[in-house]
Length: 296
Image (spheres, rainbow, N blue to C red):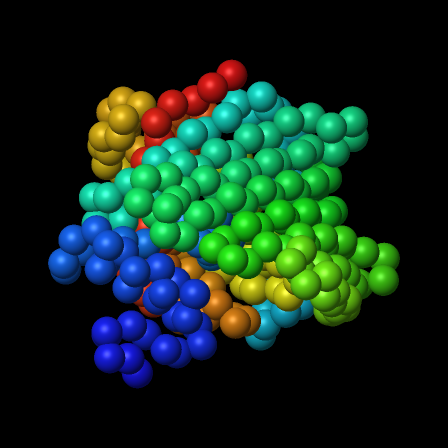
């Protein structure tokens, strides 16, 4: 359903649709620009995402018709500590912003941080300044906590999620930074789950042989099951260089994200499995993340 200016009014498209239509009028006819709204969470998302593994599983969740497993990293696996992956974010060849992901050791845990910053016309019309931090157990890849600070247009909020595997519950606390309104929600947690950002690193740790297929749970307040398929090998050119890569396709098979989109990730075809390019197809368009550089 669309308004007089052709803007979508469906609930799912409301926030993004406003950005798209404003850019349409402000930038160039026929060019729907998209902001960086929720790129990390969604590709992650469904991101966000993907992952799988070869070694025997150490934790399971019973969500769905059959157990879905997250496996521990192989004994000799080296985490990419201290590396920052810096991406440009594009929509229809227009740069919408920048995204950065990084992993660091944090005592007995691992900390993953991510940020999304709008730029150019998008920053003027719909500024985005998002921060994400996740902590997980490096022995199991089970997520322990998530913190998100989101500034998207006029919306500003902070969200914390804690995973209590002993109680089999995840707890979400959210605060609207403009109104002060708070929300507290508990959801069932059937077993070990990764999250929307750590899922990229989980997949990075896998063998990624073409023809392989994996399913795993992602927790972001509620649990979504994601299926990831390693499709093929191909060369991919991005600003950081030209890489032999493996293409992985991921989509949600359960939960609220089911049939809502698809994510493609190109990992370098070498032991580091650097994510050199990501593409997320959503209901309102496609976002392209291209690796600019790796900072150490």
